[in-house]
Image (cartoon, rainbow, N blue to C red; front, side, top):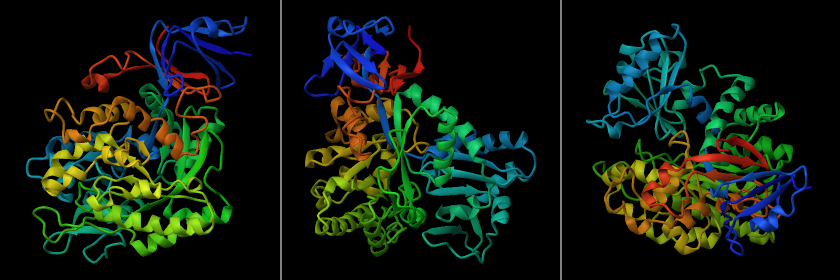
Length: 533
């Protein structure tokens, strides 16, 4: 039985044999026919719901291939210090929250970036002490790789001048050896581990709001990189009947043994929640200058970044994961980190070949690939490693990248290089590091601009076509999730995941892509968000 027919539309399928049609038919969550209005409407029965699109544009649903879903959900109720132009504004927002928060309760926030401030200096605990003396405060940096805390938070975490730096992290200290209130990389966990966490039920409630935001942006699937608490809350959401997005869930490093002991392999689950890859961190990030580089940061001749998991340990993890049916996904931002990860995956690929395993059975990924050494540009394609990138980062980071990486930025934030080499691309937002809206990423990939700057685009040779950008948010993530046979395009037998837009993306100027509005989002044949007649 045909349950739903959409007709009188401009439907871009991203399916090469039939790139554009005006109508499609849906039955039990799948697309069963596509074609002209006359042909498809002829399939209707008395019980078929027919939707006249009035000429509106339809695309396959979009996927965010890299975000932090629990963090995104929790960020909606946190203090908003995202890209504030000064420390004073950040402090004023913390003060406003402290004025309405009971003494002793935690205050958290996200999104500050000291490179946007006039002096570009890291803030200190004393700054926060002045506006929130009675509350422990933790503000995560925009990059997610540093935290700014006050004295109360340091006290609760037991951090003193004699506290040793944790493995893979650093407690910033002043000239006397006292903690300044800036915690880099894993040092942030010393404070986070003392904070009360919401229950699974509470977190599921938070995710409901985040999910509505995602659907209004046109997302129908996400690839999540947060902790098992996120998976638990997602399952609660599903048990309630409220899960409206598909989820690929990665497994973080410390949970690998548990996954192996339980026999979980990639693809475990179903089309709503399924297991992806092991997640490792090779290095830090550009903002706190902890991304691992071959050459030192400009103006800091002794700073080459930080190694979070060294090459030998990465090989052990990735090799073990692969032998038990799990690919590996590695966060690597600096060119030295990307190089090391490629060496690791080259070794693992050799082991897989010796076991006669096809490469498609282990869909390894490098997350971010923010800068790559010229000698390494073809290696992702050679090893069939997915470049999981976030085009919006190029626009947020370009000034900082130019300042600290100089001429090396020709090889930074550059999916064009990878596509030209034949590598597979999957695009995301890294939310809440960046806004969740995928149209910001599509706009950035096509224009290499933000708010019209810089004129002509930043490294305009790295621009992508609209088609390439859309594929990065559809078919690329579908392949990374092992779902390319049923997701990423609109074709017979594919899942009925699609979006309705207020404009034809192929008919508007590229600089208007960021302003696209989604009027409807369908997942599994049901409208999960709809704002049109």
